Image 1: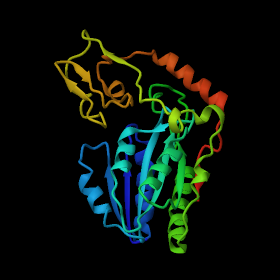
Image 2: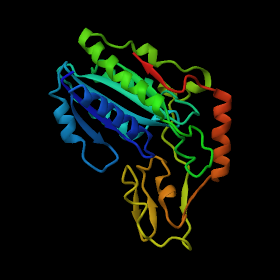
Image 3: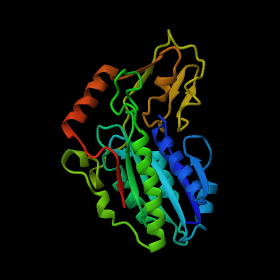
Length: 276
C-alpha cells in the first residue's frame, strides 16, 4: 500500500478512535496517510478530487457510527460523491453500541461497489452507545478497548496483504444480518428520522455551546437553538448543553429501556468482527 485515506464521521468519539488506530498502524508500516473528519466542518470536495487520481496501490478507509441500523448521512453522501479512480481500494468500518450493527456495512459496501471501488476488508467495532453518555453503566461501556484496537490493527495488516495479492472481498460477507436486524435494507430502508428536540427557554442562555459540537452544522441560534433538516440525531447538543436546556422528545429513561431491550432481544455476536 502506497497511500491511505482515512475518512470518518464520529459525533460521540468511538469511530474517531478506531480511525486513529488505523492511522497509527498505517503510519507504523510507512504508509502515507491522509486523515479527514467529516464532522469538522471542512469541505470534502478537494479530497474527492484527490481520490480520483488514486490507483491500485492506494486505499480508502471510511468509518461511520451506526444510527437507526444505518451509516450516517454524511458518510453516505461522501461515498456517493466519489468519482471514478484508477483502481483505488476501499475498506468500510463501523462502530455500534451493542443494540444492532444493522445493515450499515452492507450499505457502505454496496455504495463503494457502485463507484467501482473494490472492497478489501471491513470491520464492525463495539463502542459505548452514544445515547447513554449520562448512564453509570452504559451499554458498550469501556469499548473500544485494547482487544478491539488489536483487531483493528490486524485488519490493517490483512488489507495490506490482500492488496498485495490483488484480492477483493466478496460483498456477500457483509450481508450477515438476519430477521429484525436486517430492518432498513434495500427498498425497505426508511427515510432518515430523528427523535424531536425542544428548547427550554427558561433555562437556555443562548450561549451557543451547542453550535460547534454539531457534526453536520444543523444547529443555529435564533436567538435560542434551532435545529435544521440536516440533523442526524446524534444528541451532541443535549450532551454538551451546560444548562440542560435542550430536551429530548422521548425521555432518556424510556430511550435507555428501549436500547437495553434491543440488546437483550437481538443479542448480536460477535461484538467486534473483522471481515477479510
